[in-house]
Image (tube, rainbow, N blue to C red; front, side, top):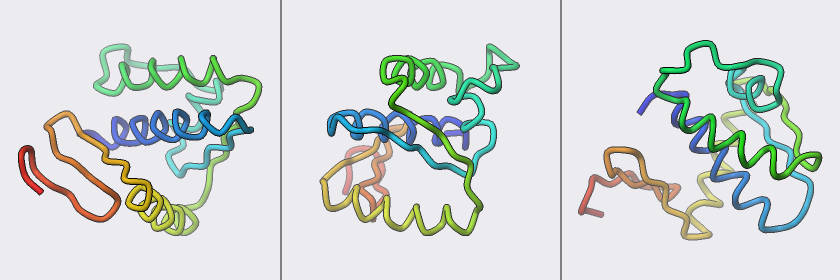
Length: 116
């Protein structure tokens, strides 16, 4: 999985979960491309890039939730703190993320396909 695929997958999961609460969504990230593409400041340069299907799904969610969603680019140090909090929430809520190879992540553990 590429870093951009992972970042868009995280954005998709965050938007889907946050939208269930029916509140304003503020999405923070340290990937300049992801934040600028989701906010509409940048477009996709290479339509054949691996992350494009994830970008398209994320943008569909963003469009459905506008104007109640905003984006902010953050520093790597703050992102590290957010990662810690995010992992804790994933684990507490029982959310399991799957990558394209079937590996699972529950906020604390990575597991190969068919194994925990």
